[in-house]
Image (cartoon, rainbow, N blue to C red; front, top):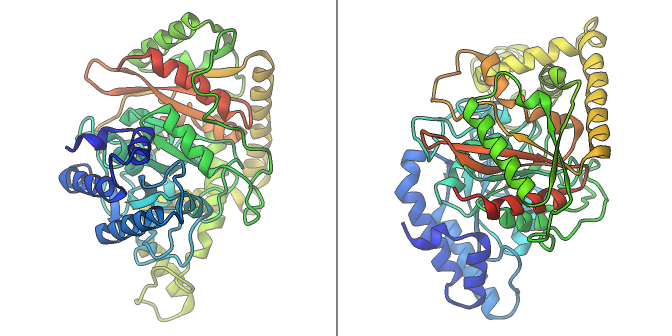
Length: 481
């Protein structure tokens, strides 16, 4: 492997700035790494080497003529989860129903990356319509964990996590609806950041659950996550849910002292069901925080026990509504074995959607149906408010919340595919952040006895990504993995 594939975004940019490397040399190195390793890892669904090298050559000419200046990500090859629209590049959501779909527009986040000069190396595999915790629900093939090819990389952004962890790109974009950035980041031993709901535009993100979805960066260092968020964050008139709140300078806070900060640890997160090695790793990280001058105290999340149930009512309900548009009429797959419009709808959706997507559509349609709406969806919304209030009370007493990202180590391929409930439990510590809309980051904090990564989750108040990143970086400097 070319050594530059191990470099961070910052190191690559510095090399470009000093003219030690060209954009084409960087792009070529990462494409060679893709050819070398992705047949085993299976992180990507689509890579176009010729297109990538054309982008690199055009960028070099613009830089040479002075038409473009070096931005945060100029010349950096990135991977993008395949549920984010990319003009002229297939965007399948890991589903057969969109197998041939090529968008005619870029998502806002892609526009911002292109404007900053980033290169799109390829689109990464994901659980179908981002519904899953292992990337095994992809309609095409499962991705594999670079740390152990017999294990899952997590999901639903497992392809992006695997691409970064296997040094095929220095950074990638994922989406997080219930933990889909943070859990695969923990499983693959990288940094994954879910911003506050509304911090990053969702325009062009193909919707799973609109009140929960959020795009965020997946990187190998905390500083790189801050850099990507700096480029991605900010208001967007095309997304009515995108906040107009001022965007902080996330990079400037990196490296500053965290002495005196109050850290809360939810008692519910360290109780039964947590892998003993993960508990030990979290407790060790908390001691490191105390050594940095932070105070650590136990807090309570009284409604944590309801979080998973609430999530698996709200998310499928929104999904059943969002996925109604895939009917074979306007775009995507259309079945040819139908004699009427009704038969065409039924056959198209039966052929196009996989088992997990069908399961969640049925759950959501049931929860929204007449006679059941009040008992399920309406009640779930009320409990969601109680969960949000738990966070607000907690952040009156502490600056940040710390705990495990996932309850288990990365599991083996096929280990949980026959038990949906067991799979859903992978998100037990991450769904609360989506329900409350707060930012969360997963940081590698230890390695198990069997050599598998363990992630530590850091949650902050709304729009306090800078605070989360600052603590994560302080920890990152102290932890030697």
